[in-house]
Length: 294
Image 1: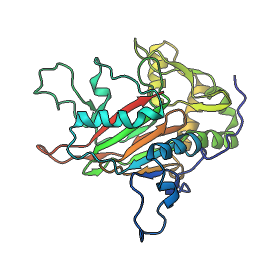
Image 2: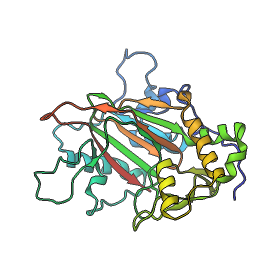
Image 3: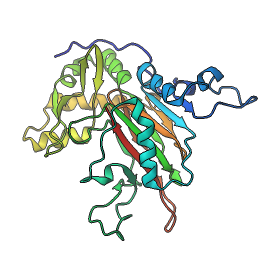
Image 4: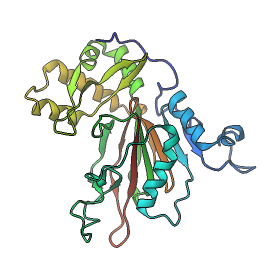
């Protein structure tokens, strides 16, 4: 087992103190006379892909690319636009024909009910419920390095993205609950099944860098399905992790606009969202494109 040591650098942040200029990447530079606090012209003068890469690899591990032009694009064309933007950042995972809903996320799985396809084209989330903070596990070969979420249509109300630095969570636990870290450095079962036989710890070090994976629901289910329910010590460790996540000072909240691309280091930053409401039919509801890359 790795020996827990504190993480240093810009990947350790709290939402209460993180500066917008450290993660916001406008596609177009600000015009003269723009409000104070906008990113510097030198920063905006660079290619947005390069700026996003710096945020991901040498900054907080997240970026919001703001201002991508989605006019005249269908939802499916937005998927391809997101994949093209992310291609220079990593090896974009191919779309799985057996799981087309991995790419388009909406509040309803009934969007394709009139289609001849027996497989829904969208993945359903319950809008009335918050989505708990987690990292993506994905399918084979396991957790992706990068996650991209392109906002095609925001919700009418709510639906803010909630982001927390896993490195900051680690450091808080190291300072306040070092007794639980040994269990978080040991393996957990993150679900079972042909595509989801994932076994790894919450925290692990690779090539000198701390990697983090977390989803309380997956872990609880995975351990139960494996016939190895969580021990008292494991429950205490996960409870301590959740207690840090519940501290409102840890989280950055971002309401994505149409054309915003949220990029995350899936090994360092947890994401979730607040509950939301959509307009009634026939108006189109909230829709995000999801793309994974390694």
